[in-house]
Amino acid sequence: MKNMFFLSVLLIMGLYSCKKSDRKYSQVVLNVKYKVDDLSLQKDTVRYLNNAGNLYSVTHLEYYISGITFHEESGHDFHCTGIHYINGFSPQTNQILIDSVPCGIYTSVTCNIGLSHALNVSNSLTNTAENVNMAWPDNMGGGYHFLKMEGYVKTPAGNMGYVVHLGTDTSLVSCVMTQQLYVFAVRSEFDMTMNLNEWYRSPAVYNLLTDGNNTMGNPSSMSKIAANGYNVFTLQLN
Amino acid sequence: MSIKSLSSNAKKRLSEACFSISILVLLASCHKQKETPPPVSSGLTPYEIKYPFTFPALNIPSDNPLTVEGIALGKALYGDPILSNDGRSCSACHVKSTSFSSFSANAIPHINEGWNTKFLWRGGVEGTLEDAMSFEVNEFFKTDVTKLNANQDYKARFKNVYGVETISRKDVAYALAQYLRSLTSVDSRFDRYVRKESMITMSELNGFYIFNSEKGECFHCHSLGLFADNAYHNNGIDSIFTGNNAGRYDVTKNPNDLGKFKTPTLRNIELTAPYMHDGRYLTLEEVVEHYNSGVKKTATIDPIMTLPSFENGLQLTAQQKSDLVAFLKTLTDTSFVNNPLH
Image (cartoon, rainbow over all chains, first blue to last red; front, side, top):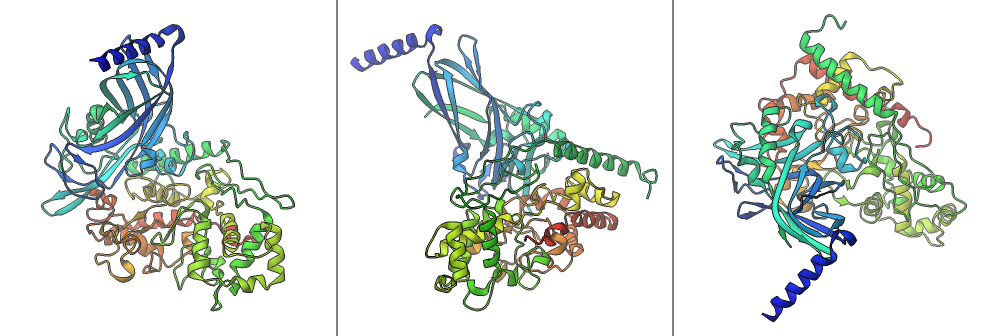
């Protein structure tokens, strides 16, 4: 009881200290994690089952996150400008640091997987080795791969490769993470977890065997996967 | 062949390829944001590497800045059997006229290695060029530095470049790394075409379209710029992974790495026959035919190699195969192999 009282006092003090007049700021850390429904993500193991009934593995997972926006209860939004290259199997790329997020209570966070039209221009990003390898051919629209997700899917005849690649403006993925976030500490850490099965779940079930095991150059496949990506991430306090 | 004589499909593809090239040409005029090179010791002459906008930034370790003197020292060591105990030198296998590769040993060409972080066909060394050269000096050559320390010319040059009284294996590796970092090939016919300095033929342009689209699927591993992706892949040349064909598995002992090898650059590919890790293909035509009809599907084959477009091979026509080879030959940089500084 005593602890609850002190916590309430601290929360009220925290809220008071973040009034608009002298608003404080927090460094927000998003630790990007992965799962496939109830299973953890392990490279190169054909053990994941999606809603289409595909048994599949993941060998490659690269993507960009951009346009991170914190939506405040009051209706105010905090927009971040950073572009973050992420390799699911390279731990050092799976932490996003966002400085100077205004303290407050946020009701949701949105972001893009991929790059907005203005950013999705060939050679517009710093030429790191990763960005160079993410280039999307100019004769196919130019810009960058938004997502590279590859692996194998089980078929009656044995394992077959699948290559889910997204790129070009029409397959930009808009993600919504509805979660109340209290951002008051000097540094606030949250887990941002991608459930890979969501890519194949809704609003339309995507079957790697019948909808196509290669999305690149196939606008309808890319659109279907991109639309399914709206809820691939969930947020929770670290 | 005139443009009028092309089919509408061919015209469409040609126009897409032209669009692609025009974007590259436009971007070629952009200024590249350069990394600030690390400072060099006084008395030494800094050396700057120029490279195209399509290359990633070149990272140079702060403790081994490039200098004219350091590169010259590395070059001398590269060609000197003093490095080994059996009369071998680097240049015995990495021959300049074949873009610092070797016909007999099928050594990986020493070009644009400064951008790599994975070395040797199986990735036996990962890290910087300094790490790779340390492996060569310590493990491959087992260099006896007492011989170098007995050589007054080398002693003076190492003192000048690295300020050392006694030459160590690390100093030797660093000098070699400087030289290898300077071996940049960036002036092929294709580079000059991108820079709007010369033309390529319609066949070559069509080959570029095949290369840089789902038709050929080459670009995913041989990314434009370096024409490599600094990664390991099983490209379907074997179905049994024993002996020399086990690939990266030899290093990691992970069964998922069976048959995977480092993607070699395609720059100067015309000069670096034979092809693949064991030199099984003697010509570029044989290589293209492998992707066209000879891919072997196994558990570790790269997923890209099992796409529908690969289901029955690429099914390129004879003309398309010829075009693809023609494009690959535009990546030949004769100024590189004729450069007296190399």
